[in-house]
Amino acid sequence: MSKKTVLITGASRGIGKAILQSFGNDYFIVGTGTSEKSVQSILENINSLNLKGSSFKLDLGDRTSIKELTSLLDSQQIYPDILINNAGITRDNIMLRMKEDEWDNVIDVHLNGQYLLIKSFIKKMVKNRWGRIINISSTSAVLGNKGQANYAAAKAGIEAMSRSLARELGSRNINVNCVAPGFIETDMTKEISEGNEELLSSQIPLGRLGKPNEIAEVVSFLASEQANYITGQTIHVNGGLYM
Ligand code: NAP
Image 1 (cartoon, protein in one colour):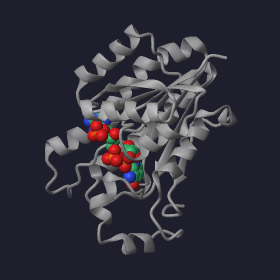
Image 2 (cartoon, rainbow, N blue to C red):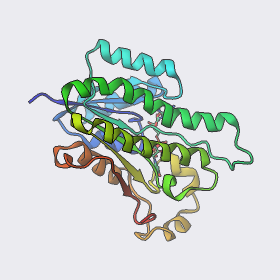
Image 3 (cartoon, rainbow, N blue to C red):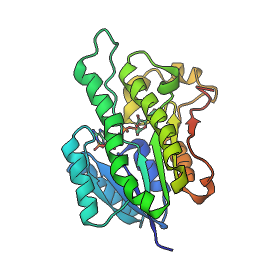
């Protein structure tokens, strides 16, 4: 059986890096980062784990960059069977002060960027009658969060888009799901958690922040044949923060 190709956006750090590490030798792994340094570090990670794969530059906030990536993959005949939309940013501000570019950047990177990637990669999945799309959402989509109207709106949009896609693509054997992390220890939460860890943990029934690999395990399960009958779902992984 030929190796399935998995594409993970934002594979240089945090949750994306853990997702990359959760795929073994049965896969050809493609990771993206925003800079040459990130692209290089992804490749080093792939090589150090003796995995097969490659890495590319991608800025989801820039449509030209998305087009360049999809044409480059096409020219190298790399067609993702599994697309993991993980890359993300925050530009937090309360609505009274939120600037248009803070709103636009977050919507672009999460929602518009994912739309463009999904649209270009599903053609081949439809042709192959097999595919997996796994989108990383957030508890902010369902709980809301002060200062995160942009981020929560983008993540809620991703969840709603995923359910619609699950209905559109189910007959082609393409499963579309979301994983919604709670507070996970990565660069994204460093600022919020520094000095506040005890307060944050007290709101979480399991009493601690999550680790990137605890999200990655669920993502790699959803990508596996064991998850063949799961589609249109958002799996919450948050230590009980939202239930
Ligand atoms: P992170 O540690 O900040 O890593 C972000 C990743 O996204 C990096 O690989 C980064 O690449 C890439 N990235 C940033 N801006 C990008 C852009 N414009 N275009 C393409 N890639 C970009 O974040 P994380 O905590 O692992 O978060 C991963 C996902 O989980 C995100 O979707 C986030 O919203 C979601 N999430 C995280 C938490 C949490 O508590 N950490 C909770 C809920 C949901 P470079 O290294 O090149 O900058």
